[in-house]
Length: 571
Image 1 (cartoon, one colour):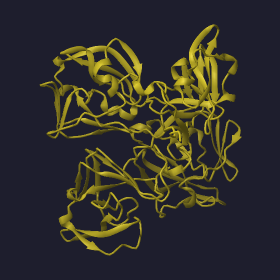
Image 2 (tube, helix red, strand yellow):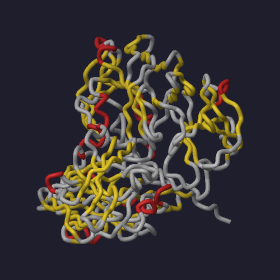
Image 3 (tube, one colour):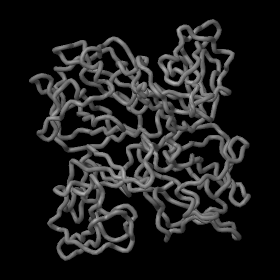
Image 4 (cartoon, helix red, strand yellow):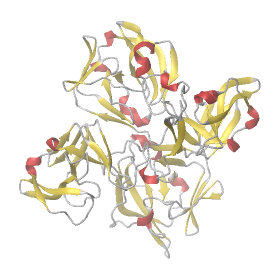
């Protein structure tokens, strides 16, 4: 019997924004149905769009066809505009899950727009997150035997699917040991990078920096990171093993100055052997990461299952200034059915001397718990604060009740030296505010309360698109500010308004972020409405009211009042 060919997975995600692509000023693509595609073994994502949304008259059969490079593709085309031929620019899929979609080589087009903002380098994935977190860890970098960096004030960059990168302040570098390279690469999550070589090999890049990073990672301005693959990195006296990344294949020999390139997330513009055509037969499957809604991350989560993964962040929890948790080896845990992760910690990283077993609490916030513990601190007793799961792989760890807890508990949580709020940030969740010129109208009970042609559309993983409008474009006649405030770990602190026209009242259906965090600065003081309970018209087309994790709390046109428990996340 013949061997069954190995299976390779293509993943797809809905892109969200309106997408347009241009060649020599000619519109080639205009769609609101774009997908972000990740093919097996490729570090860079790209767009696929319905064939109906592509100018087919600008496509010509390609020789050679790019189909060998793209599993599941049946046809390939060059792009031809006014005699300018862009080779192997497009291909059509003929596989379940992508049938009728056309893939497009990002750099074959001159420019891309998401709504009214440019798309740089390659598509951003809604499951790819970057957090730049200040730290006080002691980081030492050596090239050979020479110390080139020594700092106790690094910025740790945690990026989905990539190793932690330690960014060193310029003042803590041996600048004389580094040589500028004429090499620049772009990252859609961080910006345009420049590179340094070491004086012992002045043509090979060993470090990089972002002179003008994107707002999401503004904290790395004035800092330099090193390829752990090429140097010796010590953190708090311990040597870090060189990571194996998608760039490892080419780093030691190929990363040289004298050019520019694009890369996903970090560090190198080079392809590696995994981007070559398949040499043996394979079976191709397409996985829709949006299919299981709130639970999808990089891969679908089995229903009813606990999932967990290690985190490289130092995590601390304090009560009255005392560390009751201090861990360099936390695990992120998603309980069955939960879109929000929590942390568990090795028992040695928790003040177990302060714990005493107790009966299970009535709230039932955590499933499959083997034992609950009170925490005793002086005369204070923090009831049912700590617990241990009865779950394979987690029994040697302790969790701390945090999200949705109303009782007294841990007062402050920190990742490295940055305080975090509400719950840990999900490494597979993004928030992208994008400026648009769409015409947005908002109606409550048939009354128009907003009309704008300058919205900011906020695309947040697993949530409906939110339309943020300038306050000048909102009619506040029937809006009454309330005492409700909520905190979102991804956007900041929100204030709320209710709708009240004397006959109908809708509590807390409008909100704004006066001082959002850096990644969401574009929505500062803009006003948004719960799509779930108002009617929104975009470019003359009424939108369906979406179903979301807020729908149950909002009810049939009613939003949670100030005294109601805050939903799983702020909108």
